[in-house]
Amino acid sequence: MLDDGTGRIHPQLIPLFDQLRTMPKPVLGLSWLQSAQPNTMLRDLAAGRLTLTHEAFQHLPNWRTAAYLRDLLMQSGVLPLKDRQLLLFERWLETHLGAVANPEHAKLLHRFATWHQLRKLRAKAAKAPLCDSTTREAHEQQIQALAFLTWLNHRGTAVNDTRQADLDAWQSENYFTRRASHAFLTWCMNTGNMPALTIHFRQAERQAPMSQHCRLPAGWDHRFATSMGPLVSVI
Image 1 (cartoon, rainbow, N blue to C red):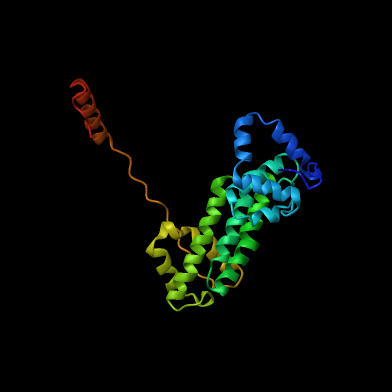
Image 2 (cartoon, helix red, strand yellow):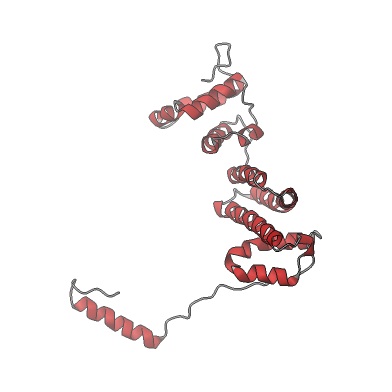
């Protein structure tokens, strides 16, 4: 699989070869290597049909296999180390933006991703590995940003003509889902893409703690049910 066409292992892939032949569970590793997708990717790398760059892996169709193989290439030193969660988000972002039908919306979302989201994520990744929850939040910000632009479009309003009444209506319909759009809305206002408006913040409602009066009867019911044996259950 790693033959470069001259009967030898591709010189750049020797560290990967050394890592594969010393794997702790050879049976599982060999099973994976003989699967169609990894087999093809490794042969393409060895033959030069697939370049040894992060950019090349970003465009491969089988993203799960590509991500795992790229992890191995980074671990063996063949590819430079980059944050895994950041790479996965960048790949998702490219697909997400490519599916936006409105070119003006796509352009604005791309600018938001480039100048706000990716700058923030890269700064965090430089200090410590990103958590899945961090990139999941960035996903949701993009999804809700697109939802807001689409919602505005259905109202016949451009983002730079957004009024306070529009923003209030957007937030009131499904606040806790649409809260993820706050980052995009704030960025739009700070960059002059939207008039300066008020974003309303609402705290999640918490249930009041059970009173002493309620706890005592509940405890009594539990003790009574226990004393009655296994045939009695408290719902």
